[in-house]
Image (cartoon, one colour):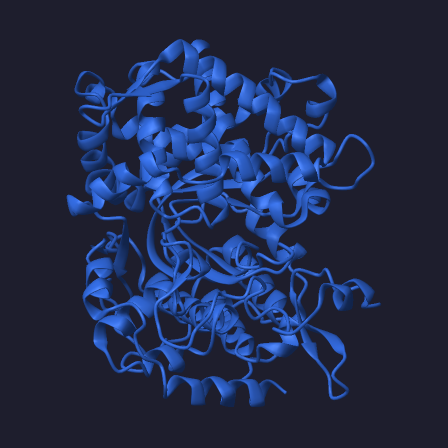
Length: 562
């Protein structure tokens, strides 16, 4: 069955032609600023550099797999004849513009299926509901049709055979990092997870890592691509170099989570759970993006794992991608602020505030509760496909709440509190340019429209600039925090849908301001020059990995597949 599907996509590639004009595609391409992802690798040992190359190889497999999940094998996109159309499709991992509400930009392509390639295109909701397989809601499976045209659940580990190659690369990397026993253990466990579909042990091993200079986040992780049910996860990878000094600076904030949880502005039943005590807060320079995190708008911070039970037991790790945050601040945030923020308040736009709003967004995923207060199960299961948008909205607003609380306690000492509020609003303008179709886009619009309704800012019709009103914004922040926490705790599906419908859209006035930013040629987002050559590492097979001394080689859990 899968071979037939791939043959269909291969034939489809022969007829792909631009639907959006070439001029328009060229203009949209100009909206992305090219950034080179590099890092100082001079302190790495030869073995670490060898291991790093294998991590890059594993990450490339995740990239190929996400092409299949999103649309079709990479070869389909690579076959597009027009250079700019092909480049734009590569940015979007398919023929839909992710920063323009998933508008199709090639001929013959309709709307993007809400279930991407996780489900049969002709699957009826009633079919899924009546499927009697307990694994049908497993996030690491696909739904296909069997030889009798019936729905069938297939684990990723069986469906995506390329996972064998990624697992082998991780095992080889584990050998190169043999001196770092904890990191090598994680890599071996993650390799095993890719081919067994069981990720729990590797998630725990990853959370236990503390002092590794190199890191990789890899596998099927986020469920944003599944907009049908919000269940199935997409492949992605981040290859990271840890900034030890910055990470040390940030770690103090995590200890305040239990205290902040108790102080949330909501009834105690909505804050009865405890945040994981082993949560980490680290800063990294990222040197490679692959798959879901590289599609359309680029991820700048990560909060994992997503498993609610594991979060409660072990906490999470919040990873701030410092070099990407800096690139977006300098190339996008500052130019936006100069166009839309009141000139008197421009002094409040700072990198420290921008970094902090992003960082505390990730930390705030750990606040609130994971289980409903009325027996509807987990918040995620109760809210279904709308969970992601509300959860991102919660993290946004509680991030600002955390900043306010920590600043008042004199724990957060950088700048003025107004810096964070003004930068927060400017950050909405940056993020809503990604469109309102994604979970993050909807979250941004809820916040923007709620703040506008509460008078947290006003817009000067003559200048088109926004002025932030501190006290009103503080009140709006508190009331919106309470609203979202209650909707989550109650598992209130109708309430969430109403909130998204009423406040999750971009109005004409805001669109006019966003168009102004485009007219000024301010980038919408960034794209990367990345990989072994950019890092100054030779690529395979020019300089094959040399084995370590036998005494330092960890034994793989099973034979390497070649």
